[in-house]
Length: 378
Image: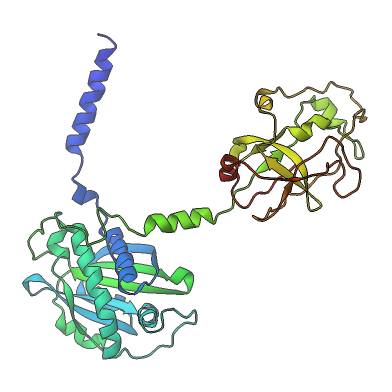
């Protein structure tokens, strides 16, 4: 009973916390929802790659809104429920990127020159404006935010800031600012969305995601992620030999001393990944004049082998054949022929101590672990 009492008390506290927790609509961040809507709309409309570096949200008066709008860029007047009006502004950099992607299929790295926005420019960007607002509305449907976020769409293009102050109502506006990185850094731009802070519409019931997007899924996300992962590099380390020695012996080491490595270590090289993750045992050999590893060629018994201890006072004189020099990690091409070691140690440099070899094939399991960019250190 004494043990259950604290558990019951903890359960009551958790239940009370759940009841007191704010609803999902209060925890939602509309600025991030807008960022996601813009990214998906740009990709669906023209394949434009957009990422949002930063986003902000605030409520301000009409005079403050007019000061935030860019002098050169698209000023799209929006119409919404209850005769409400809003505005979406794209600076000249973001606008030109949208147009260039549609017209040429790419975005130039050169910054665009400042110019007056034409009706043709506005027509080319209108679809992106509407698609972004529709996705924004869908994402907020069923929540309290849908009262002020739903029902807006592109109405017309305003060529000058001066008449905008007369067209918009003297009310408070919810202003969103997005800083964009376009086409992987080829261009940067800014987008501003302003909607009346006081919602005039009804709360929109939950809507289904656009076709091809179920519960936030992106049909191309998994293949793109797989492609990026498979192109990544994995660092592997080949541990030829390990032993322990007292600190006093380490302090007594001098340049020119040789640390012997047993010949048997050639057949029992340990392959390790990140954070010393064991990947298997290998056999040390030679390939095109360089040291190489045969995956899966080591002795399985070496998995639990103890690390030998070097007594204090050892002069490190090599009583048995040893390997000298410190090889550097090298990349192994997919078409390289690995060569297996024999029982003898050939003398010629730069691969002293490396045996003759024949062509071998790595086992399938080991190949999956090592990847195509195999490199090793001995």
